[in-house]
Image: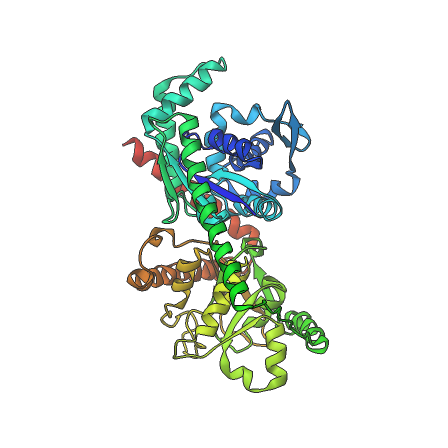
Amino acid sequence: MINIAIDGPSGAGKSTIAKLLANKLGITYLDTGAMYRAVALFVVESGKDVSNSIEVEDLLDKVNISYIQKDGEDRICLNGRDVSEDIRRHEMSKYASEVSKHSSVRMFLVDMQRKIAAEKDVVLDGRDITSFVLPDAKYKFYLTATPEERARRRYEELKAKGQTVEYDKIFADIVDRDHNDMNREIAPLVKTHDSVEIDSSNLSLEEVANIMLDKIGHIETQRVTSNEEKELKNEIVHVKPVKKTKKKNCFYKGFAAFVRWGMGGIWRTKIYFKDNFLKNSKAIVICNHYSALDPCVIISKLLGKNGKVVMKDEIMKNKFIANTALELGCIPVKRGEADISAVKGIMSALNNNKPVLIFPEGTRNKGENFKEMLPFKSGVATFALKAKAPIVPLMYYKKTGIFKRNKLIVGNAFWLDEFYGQKVNAVKDEATEFIYSKMTELREETDILVEKFKGNKKKYLKYKRIQNKELLENVGSRSKE
């Protein structure tokens, strides 16, 4: 499967180059930016605030994006209506940048984009294609240009369409959007270490496309040569690959399904903000840890059948428990030593877009102060950096138990992108501290929800909206000063 990922700032020519590249290679062009613009258009036309995550999330179930062929090109449709021209209005750029900040929108569209890329050869362009949407894409490019050149191109484009625009306004919008895209909390615009950077300021579209095609052709030639060498080697030593088969134990598979169903009922837990959980996506799921049964509700209600759970190796001593645990997605790890098998299992799951649950404290917290977390191990940071995986934080309100009314809060996903491109061993401790600070923030939010608002989600969300509005007003007043 040929997946080509192109990232870069607004106005660098990504969409035009992606279309040209797709045409030359005879594969599909998927305009991810147009998808965000389509969602933004729907929000604006619905009379809702694009910066309000709650209002935007409530509309997503009503959004249906599709493509049609017209005059030899793909046209994007919103709920059956061709909006290819409407989404290109100048103001839609800013609205699209706003809606792209919301995790619910990003997960909604990312899931759609990944499914398409898994089924056909595609070229995708956007802000986080190489770092998040398709981190395993074979070909990655970072296309950029100076802000002045990008503003000039946009000005000429809009002027040619008959729109009355000012160059200074366009330039200011581009600088502002660059800042928003590069500093947003969720999957910001970054140049990954394995992306080929191309500055298009003084290059024609054809020259940029040729640079990319040369790079793709070089890699493909290497791949073909490598495959030929392998085939030749096998022929010389008369080695035929043996296909390994794995016997499936129907009993354990069925019993594990029963256990998965039963765990959610026995381990009574109220889950708040379940929609924050990244479905059908690679993610490292972390949670504070009080009881050996803490994974139960997470396995039952969140991870799904494809999810994995890191557990201590001691549970594998009993054959019955071991086989059931493996069917439940357990990855056994030997604590206190370098367990290569566990590392491979975790990385394999993440690389196959599966969520992996890890308790960063490394052991159960038996302290008297249930709000105080133990120091975190560096494993979560290491895996998140190597796999460029998002981290989804979970927080149990207090010590859990079978006969208690447990409360579990799902926080917003975050990335360790500020550490990307650096040696893992050099930054894993700093990254671990960052993860701990994120969990501390979620601890504080959990206390407010449960203690101040008695678990009333609506009142809590209203409180958060007021807080966010006041914060934006304060930032706006300071910027004017």
